[in-house]
Length: 384
Ligand SMILES: *Cc1c(COP(=O)(O)O)cnc(C)c1O
Image (cartoon, rainbow, N blue to C red):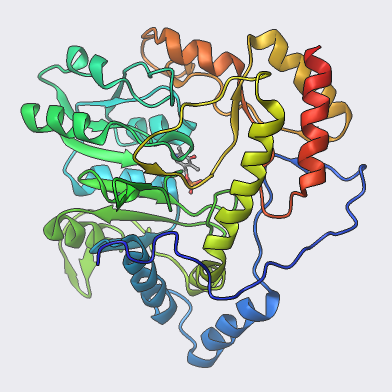
């Protein structure tokens, strides 16, 4: 069955409660990488030392690709060096080497910079205020004869209107590439959120929900495109036969080892984040604005964004938290349509407004409930 392993219960594994004695002087950042028990990572590293293959589609990379594609219920899954190169080679594999790419201004800079790096022009469509994803009703007015693709982002793990976007893409013969860097383990209408579009790209960077230290993936709908991408990621050649322009986007066995060691803990990682998110919800209710719950989404709890009344209120809360060694982050600021190296400025009032007053609170496995409670108390105190 497709996506059978999604968010299923763990096999009797227990997360170790690290840093039990965290003192208030210890800094709390927005995230902290999950680390598996060292001996479990070492067991994979021992395999690498035994067979001597360090990279170039080794056995651990193969094993991880198989595990993750089964977990996601997808057919064509390729593990690559990072989530940024994943976007760049997705554009290349779909033959988008110039023209305009419609995208969202509310994301990490890599969404826009990848489009620019591939010598395409990002065309910004404003977001909807409920979940901060691209506003599907404003896409068509930005389509021109030069438009080649739509690149939305499932920001914070919330689902874009995938059906509405596909309808527009079909009507105008456009490709759809989802920057799904936040969407791993979110399930939409019974399907992995990363299975939508012509290609979805993931990031497995150390700061993400599930990580391979550095890493990323492309999930590809079409077999021929997947084969093309596979060639592109290893310099475009098979032995002495040079077929097309390529790059090096291959992953190493050590990164696969971290992915394999982390994978059994995934559902527990999500469970713990869910507990913390529910606690924040309970304590902060009425004090901050939150994204709307999406009906058909099994959420992955990748982030905990809160929207303040205005930027002044956000800055006041940050000042208080920083004084107590707590460092939330302004995700995402500034709105990407305001990047200084763009050719021209297109106004996106909703994204610009949300960007000015949104932040993500600390959310990670090692964060204690008492710490989350302290963070909430400080926020409430500074809002008074
Ligand atoms: C993290 C991130 C990326 C880049 O991924 P890397 O693996 O760090 O290169 C791209 N897009 C979004 C939305 C991200 O959050």
